[in-house]
Each structure stands twice: as structure tokens, then as C-alpha cells.
Amino acid sequence: MPSFATAFSPGHLSGYFRPVYGTDPAQTGSLGAGIVIQEGVTSTIWPSDKTEISVERLDPVSGCMVETVPASPPIHYLLERMGVTGTVRTECCLPIGAGFGLSAAALLSTATAASALFGLSLAPAECAALAHEAEIVHRTGLGDVAACMGGGRDCRKGPGIRAEIERTFDIREPLCAVIFGPLPSPEVLGSPEAMARVIRAFPGRCPVDARDFFSLSRRFAVESGLATPQVVEALSACDEKGVPATMTMLGNGVFAYGDEAFPLLTCLGEALVLHPADAGVHLLEVGG
Image 1 (cartoon, rainbow, N blue to C red):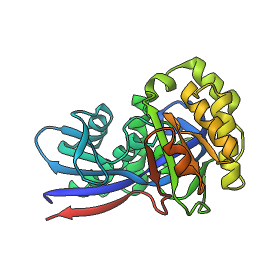
Image 2 (cartoon, one colour):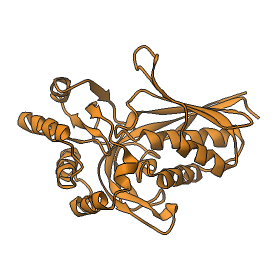
Image 3 (cartoon, rainbow, N blue to C red):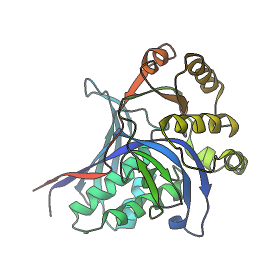
């Protein structure tokens, strides 16, 4: 057996979505549109007699640890479903629980690394199915795993990881985001009232281009009732400057596109620069 395995999954900015509740996790998920981003999660797993998990956020410049969470029930569940135990360390540079699809990225990269380490020979779709199941069971996401299997601006036309996904690579310049605080996904996804508003606000179609994506997403953020007062204020500021922007789903923040995005969002808080991803999850290294 190798001594370790490391995999990477990109993150995901969801612009709008509609939940779909099936009879099992494979048929449960969401329709919707988003953008896959290079800033994601790197997961490393080592064999051990019991499962131990560390979720770490690192400073993108210094590499120093900014935040750590000593457990992850979804990842623990994932490894149990895979029938393995191991020591897992996930690393990211973006705020955790802020709408960047990091829970999906952590699960997808961990599943990919674990399959390689333990010689499970799982196909990418099988790793994704297990990661998606863990997301659904723990209510940490609905469609991010499917999106992170590839790159580009995505439009998911059905629930689960086997549904058709339209990918367009028309966003080439960096994006920018500002976060005002966490917005716990389980609380929102577990609320029937919130999900009813989301379903009513869903646009019902794929965007025709990048600007249309931001327009549809911007309207959805407000009409769904998910936008916090800080988000509404930030979106109004972007509207005044003609900057395409919308809310991070699900997170208390905003992301925007264009030359004026960074200077504008810098005035509202700590601006994060994000880059569109061309590819999805992939194995990085298997140690001998």
C-alpha cells in the first residue's frame, strides 16, 4: 500500500439553484448554474487504524494556518461508506462555510485520494457519487459535487452527478468576492420555508452568457429571500457602478466580475481574488 495520496478539487460559486428531493441521495440534488473556481481544497490521506480528520484554512500568501476544524462528520461518513480508515488533512485558502463549495471540494478530493491510496479503483463518477451522498445526508450542499467534476461556467440540468451539465468557458478574467460572515448551509437547506422561496425564485433556464448569469443570479438572490441586508447593500453598490455581481450561495457574501469589481469590493471588506477553473477534481500524488 502507498504511504499517502493527495488529490485536489476546485471550488464552486453557485449563482442560483432549485432543490430536487428524490427517493435516495443519488436522485436528490439541485438544478442550477454556477462557476467552478481554481481556489478549492487539497486533501491528503494516510492509512491508519482509526479515522482522524483535520480541516485547515491557510493564508494564501504565508501558508500559515488561519483556521482549523478538528473534525468533519461528512468526511467521516464518506470514509465509512468507502470501508476504509485513515488520517485526513484538507487544506484550503478561502473562508469555510462562506459559499465557495468547499465542503463538496473536500469530499470529492478526499474520495479521489482514498480510492488511490487503498487501491479501490473507483471511477471518477463513483467517487463523486459517494461525495454527493455525504453532502446530501449532512445537508452541506446539493449540486456542488456535480459541478466540481469539471471546470467552466456550469448549468446543471438535473439532480445528482449523472445529470446533464452544460459547461461554458467564457469567463477568463479573475472574479472577486467579499464575505461578511458565515451562512450555515444545513440551516438553510433544512428549512422548508426557505426552500419554498428558492423554488419560486428559480429562473428555470440556463444563462445565455456570463452577463446573463449574473443578471439571473442577482434577481434570484433577492427574490429567494436568501440575501442578507449586507448582501443587498453590496449588490446595490455594484449596481450603481455597473459591476455584474451576485450573492455567494450559500454564504453571506457577494462575488463580482469585471475590471471595477476589485476596487469596489475592497471598499466593502477584505476582497478575495478568484480564478475560473478549466478542469475538475484530479489526483495529485501517490506516495510510495
